[in-house]
Length: 240
Image 1: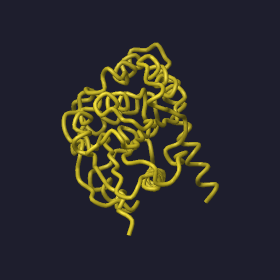
Image 2: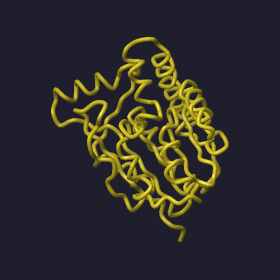
Image 3: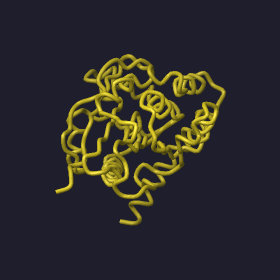
């Protein structure tokens, strides 16, 4: 088991290194990706974000976590919308992403309101049952099923009973040509991409112990228009 866990960690760090090397390049694709990751583009890149406060019934007293926070765009947007009194947490395994996130946070004077750290999605460095809501957007395509299952188990561990989890990701196309094209686009700069159907993602959430699973995050996918998007809001069952 320890050997398997170490291999999983190595794979995640390898993906982080892929992103770091790619995004640091002065190429058209790298500049284009940095542009979309900027917090100013959050509503275009993460179109379901605007409905999150209402759909998750977020309150200013909630404690929240963004897994795979990138440049912290989602956290900064929700801070403006909700005005959380608790310190917001973000996590990413890419040093480049964490560095950019901290730069964006500091430039907006939010460094006392948002804390971002570097670590793995399958090894969340937080105590049990401390978050009211956890988000994960455009991350799980880089995790094979075994790693995704571990990430979901970690997520349910850090959520309070009754806490909410929101995840969305690019999904597979029903058309062979578009599937090949979409995978080619998504593999720019990285090697590991797994696209899951709604049924597959729902099953993984159920296996991890989530309940109250309902679709969320469908809709236009602006930066790659041909790609469908799948996602859910799920709940950690209340304590019995």
